[in-house]
Image (cartoon, rainbow, N blue to C red; front, side, top):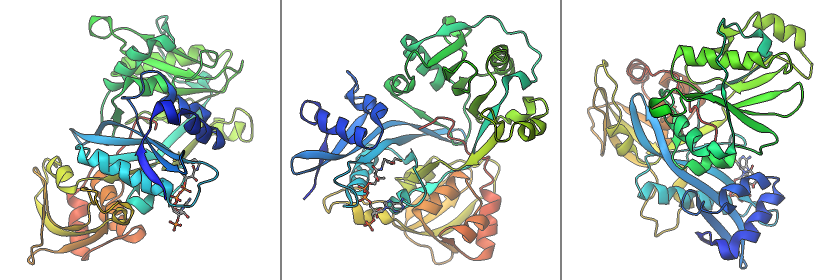
Length: 410
Ligand SMILES: CC(C)(COP(=O)(O)OP(=O)(O)OC[C@H]1O[C@@H](n2cnc3c(N)ncnc32)[C@H](O)[C@@H]1OP(=O)(O)O)[C@@H](O)C(=O)NCCC(=O)NCCS
């Protein structure tokens, strides 16, 4: 029988390092191993015959719905050792971890998926497509002469984290609270570096690039690009361009709200000319994140859809997580019937109103609808969401949300 419990560094460290080593994630052990990380990252293990064989790491943060930040739980890692696969350890440990976060007030959870299908079993639904752009920095079309940036190093981790938190915000973006998360992802000094400007109030770090890469001619990867204004964004791109005598390919996730192709010279010709090359220019798209609500009334109470007519409906929700929770878990997932109001002030109250139309939906699909990943009429075709056509059309009209973008890799 597996025992699910908090990680104890003194006795579990070796076993947990071994798990990460076995799955090829030795770098991830940093989030667990590093001095002082005890409180920043929540670490839970499943033990079999006295040894930790499965580990889940998570932390707190926020996720933005339009202009409101909601308490968020981020699942950073979930790994099962080679000897304990397919026994239900990972999903059962994850379900318990989510129950803890929910009991402490987190309203939504999110994670980066290894593939689609697995986390769906505990109620996660796929997030939006995000775009990753690879381009020749010589093709950047900005006419700015950048000021000489300051070098940033691993030692600047606190300032870098603070600047990440203070970045431009938009719908669907996530921020992870512990600075140690940024520290753990900085990489090693011989293959990662930062360039930035300290124009913020009191000379704080205002805009910067953090890059990974050490090959003479690239590729480089922009891990983080933080800015607030047009001028700052153009200055950072000009800095990247200034490296182009040497570096021929840079890859990055598009920052939220930015269509990077706007600032590239002849992007389609570059893609054709470099196809198949080590320095291939391209734009790759995929849904790499998944989300799930942990508390439907909590999320709806924080949902404000300005300028829309009010829509009321019954929502009949199923949630597959319940089967994974122990009997004594006070949090049992989100399954149930709710009367939902969408409009300037949202709400969800347990119960049913026979005068209202009913949406039948899984928590997976309902989370996607609420975040604005796809409209109701689209989800009705590809996901587990069903209702009268007039209701789906009314939902499409009320939930006209901008494309959500997590804008933070996890
Ligand atoms: C992913 C991983 C954590 C799963 O661990 P696990 O302990 O074997 O998973 P579980 O036993 O809890 O799996 C539960 C169920 O999901 C199923 N499952 C496993 N992989 C799946 C997939 N890719 N898609 C759908 N279902 C899947 C299992 O068959 C099992 O089904 P069952 O309950 O009907 O028997 C493990 O394979 C691993 O450590 N992989 C390497 C690291 C990694 O990629 N982690 C995830 C990071 S996002």
